[in-house]
Length: 383
Image (cartoon, rainbow, N blue to C red; front, side):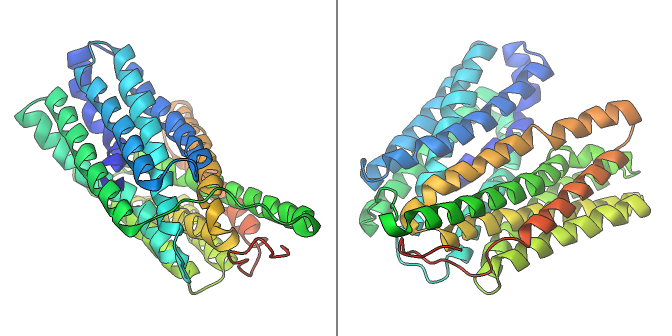
């Protein structure tokens, strides 16, 4: 289910042909991606209230249908407005809902080590983008952008059907959010609230630096002296590194304390930013920007697995959906600021320094996370 939805990260491949068929400007089309990021987050928070009210297979099918319908509308869109409705609103909302529904379905079962599987789930989005980018390019060359979008809608339909059948076969039951007992409720609630805001802050800081690199990797390595081949290598390599790091982040917290893994991940990104600041070059840029992306990928896996470690499994989707608000805010913060700083200075040196500061703050916050997991019981007394 997640692989075709990850194609949202490959939207840049569609920009040039959509400019032609819709007679729209690059800035107008770029805004569609920003809108889709917002509504992906909206969808991620719309799904949890439906847990326990709508059967899991039906919920998977409905979210897939919403995402697929949005892509169909985008494929036949006669104007920018219809593209925004189809791709930016319906596809993104359905995709955000489906993403959290799938995560909740996986976490509904007993998990003694939830980190790896949750790291795997979040790694599927960048992996889907890696598969979608060349597929989009070939499709546009062979049949055109509208037919390529129609093919994406078919892929979502097929994968959604398969996911629905698998969830039904597994007999997954989604429960509503749990509530602590009255005597323990206040302390447990306050402890988990503090943990949530710490995870939220770490995810925001790491994603701000990581999305800056992910969104502008080619331009950044060129600014540091790399050629076209180097920029293509960096773009592909960084995306692959982030996907692998998301998987690794989840795997690591099954074996090591969450604060240690989170702080170490951001320490790696911090040292990379320092190294690029001290020794700016094309080769160093490719290496260190990749490491900043790895730091972001690790935190993505840590966050997904951390929610499963700190909260009862019935609460997974609700808490995960709220943490993705941090991703949305990150997408419109440092990546946008980096573009502005480039316009002012003609380079990305200052942006790398700001990313380093974000990584340093993330290290400090990560060290304050609870060092023990709370398990899946509502009777846990909290910190």
